[in-house]
Length: 191
Image (cartoon, rainbow, N blue to C red; front, side, top):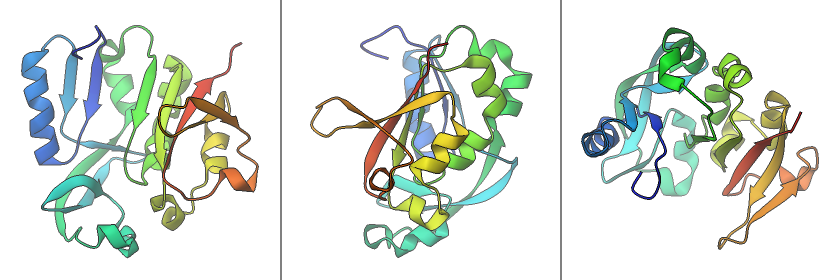
């Protein structure tokens, strides 16, 4: 927000993080909209698991406590989640103009978010979709290949470390489906 004139629509289910985003809204009232719920493929209530000392890894997946650095995710809070498709259909004015970037960092819940946004994606055609992909997806049995099938109008690029750029990958190749910590950019194909 500080270095651009971008407009942001943010969804944050965790109350502590939502309060931080709300401070930004006060600073940029015309450029950011913040909602205190998460996104999913269904409208429902879920438990959000988190570490009291570090809410960065809050997630909806209790099985990720098997990951050694997440063993402290013992706190939980009930959170509402909604489908982006439904939000979009009822609030089209919220998403005016082109969408350049859809960023999804949901600690293993990316597939559910995308599954609940298929009409939105078809209508708004974001140029880029950025996701985080890691060990969490192993427990959900979600691969880059599975996500690429959902986003068939997009090419897949791995974000290289140390600001080295993007590497186009073939999502069918097994070596591109390791559950390592990476960010991936899905770039809309030109038509």
